[in-house]
Length: 147
Image 1: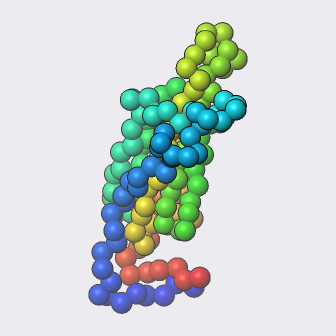
Image 2: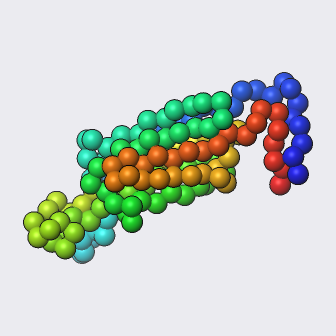
């Protein structure tokens, strides 16, 4: 049920790209000692991959360049109603690479934290084969949807 918040409510925090959660190579969980090949590549994403954030009065828009990735390899998830987790994986093997031997694929992962005004329950996304556009509506100032 909506209710009005006090007018002295501070401005919402701007979107913030959080640090990666991937284990570093010195960690005890390193895949180099594993008796099998890792399922997903944890190499850095291709250099042409990037994330840009645009803020307007009514929404936040994330433009994520993901050349070489497919729609089937992209996952969006929300955590704690404030974090959007964007993950993309590609598999570069003989089947997916038109018979050419490849590098084993690629992995892109970013977590973006939002302020209280982001409505992560109504995220919309579309992928054109190169750019993933994600739109997160902003709640109207002074109105908050309670639980």
